[in-house]
Length: 547
Image 1: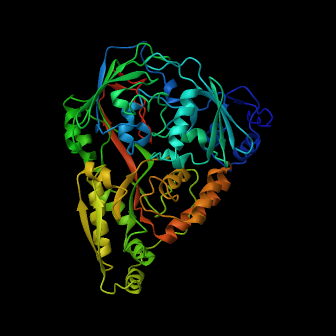
Image 2: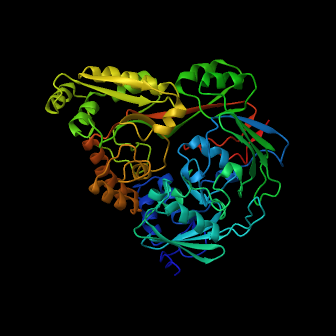
Image 3: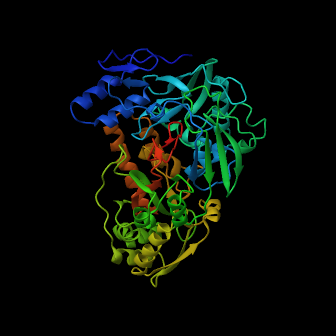
């Protein structure tokens, strides 16, 4: 059944992407903007979820950026990043791996650097008034690299495999409200939900959500070995830990990319080596620069520092179902002894914001401020005594420096903090590849969590009961019910009020020490033009050129 169209009346300067009437929530959002209750970015973001565009000044899609040259070139670009194992993109755990397939596989929607959602393989969408039925209208001119047409059958296939009972993809949690994906015709699908989900279009740009060909499973379920895609590049070679190459598709359905080739080069984990390679002209773009290399980047020729704010953080989480962390008093003692401000100042040179132990960032629009937590060593010692450890306790924290040495520096500051409360913390530092295989298994671990545009998205992935990425094993029925409500609230102010309760639950249960939010850095060659800096590290290279 087709979703019931929104009943909203026309509003000057706004139009629905599919040409139909505006969603019934639009007039209320316009009123909130006019009264100063929400800012313009929040207004545009919420409109984009509803398939509504603002004319004359709305943010443009990354893919629409003017590239600065007239046509395709023969240039090749060298991108320094880890070449991680990839088989099924829906199972990818780290963002870095996704940027290899991001330029060969495509998504139904695209979320730009301002967190505004735009059409991509879906040219428009429309939500029912209750946000439980969504119709996506697909582009009709898209072809796969093997010559097949992209159709609604491909979309249905991807949703089915994400939601399969034996699926190990985090998408099974993200889209758990989906009850059916109905194909109306070859280019129209209707997604039916058991509960409202306001940000469904935005969630479809998560790095685990590229559209795979409908025969992906039947043809081996190993994308590097059979790299069919709809994107502007095709994978030519792929060697884990060494290199990968993407080459331009001359038969691409959309605007042709300018670079003829992108070579991804794995230079190991020492980022100072990456900076040296950039300075020597051996590579053109670095995936990341950490706080440790900032001075080096600013000193060496041939390196341009790029930085931006993001809701990226370190989470030192405790598995609440494993001793001794199954005793909340132990977790509370750890949290009370931690000095988040000191970790930010000493390990990250103050280049970020202090965390509040609930994994929602002040920069996210659904953040709700809570009373400030204060360090309390006497209470930490008291709780340890009540838990049966009057002489202190020995704990071990496992980490892998997956994003850089600053992870270990942070852990060392925490080690000193906890010692003041009688908590003797041993640091188990293992190589990054080893940590990637155990990050969700160790009782006490330090994990880097990437930027998400909304706090509620992070909480849904990381703390919902049974989520594939719930590394803390946290399970709380009241929290899950609150998440369901928050995910279905379109009004930003109402959603923030619900979020306050979720944040408070996580603080009270002492699931984690979340010390700070990291400002992000990278470096590029002065030759690089139109490099799309994105808080999620989602890099579409279609418009990038070399001077």
